[in-house]
Length: 144
Image (tube, rainbow, N blue to C red; front, side, top):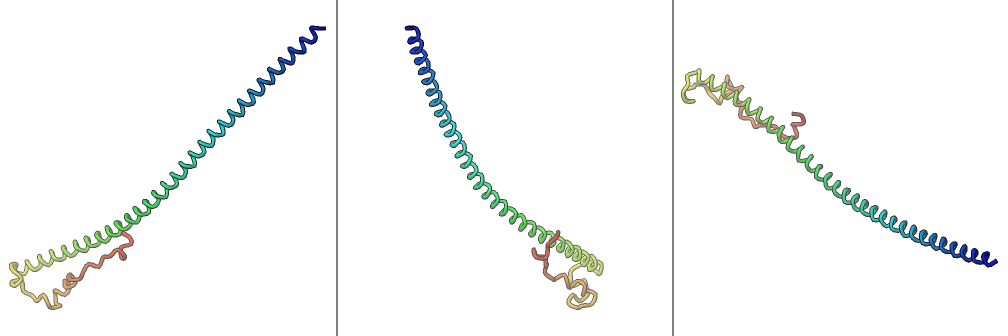
């Protein structure tokens, strides 16, 4: 009978040890889960801060792009105007060279020897338009 009481005592001690280990494991698991939640929260906070910083950078880049596009459009418009003015000046230069050739064929020399009345509308009338200003402007140059 003595052996019966001893085995019960050792079984109770064994059960107590098993229960103690279960409690330790449970506490350890809870602590591990808490650390895991903290790491997850820290990671989420980092991602939230990065998203905010990227949104700010995106807005700055969008403003910069818009400004650059406006400047590009202005430069393109000015370029169209300058091309039109260059074309007009080339036409005028060609017309003036033709006049010089015609006048040179009339006797050459100074304008006094050229003959002809530059103020009359006669044969020189077609060249009077050469005194007109160049009329190219950004508003008139939609397509180059």
